[in-house]
Length: 320
Figure 1 (spheres, one colour):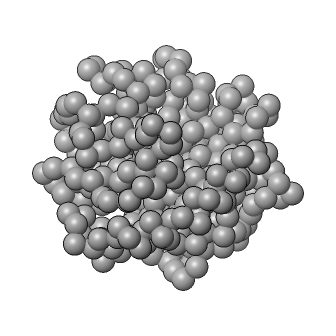
Figure 2 (cartoon, rainbow, N blue to C red; figure 1 turned 60 degrees about the vertical axis):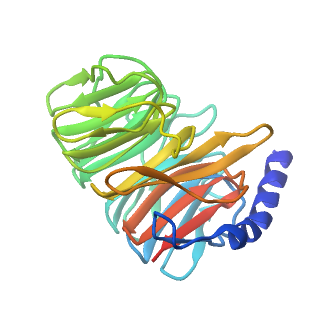
Figure 3 (cartoon, rainbow, N blue to C red; figure 1 turned 135 degrees about the vertical axis):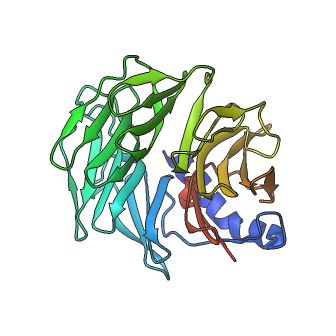
């Protein structure tokens, strides 16, 4: 643990210098990127918000909030209610209806809810699951969580229940556009739920870690495979794009012509941070110098306001 914290402190100290040397607002992404103080050295694994002045980030024993000016710790630390808890995903239907999901070693999966005033713990619908990796939904009465042990659970606005997927594999991400359009990915491929039953997606094998979309006809999946896109009819994709991270962990899109993927390449002795941008035609890399932060998630309030989070308390902000 001490080694991990020391490494995080070094990364936080070096990031401003690295970014000052490599920041470029004239690149293909058209955004100017900067490091934003997070006030923590904890690993951050999820980011989501409702607007440019209401953004949340979650991670190792940590929940952070951005009010449009600064990031602050809402809950965090070994002596807090999150002691021993690692949050991996966050999503909400509004500013007063937010869910966060994760795990605690040796305990049941973690599910938290924010009602606009405070965070509270919610009993897990699948207590034998090792932990939750992702949360998404289409409304306050249509919320889904995916589990590392292969469980999918659904919230209908009143209670949670397990929805059998028909296969057991570690699941890494879930995304929903409606109660009858849900995608989930994992280490062994992809599944789709049409509101009545689950079906494996033919031809979509491999390790997927990130999933996001803007509509039923605009969905992205990334991982240790080439980026794949769904146009409402079929999935398409090819070999791993050189512009994308070797291990793409997170993806987010604002439209068909504006998408982001984040993750890392494996260097000889450390991670090499990487962000990639899609302009509707091609993917291109964003220069980050020699950063070794493990970038885990991306979200934006618009095409000109994008957030990226990672280990060492790393928070990056792209604006125009």
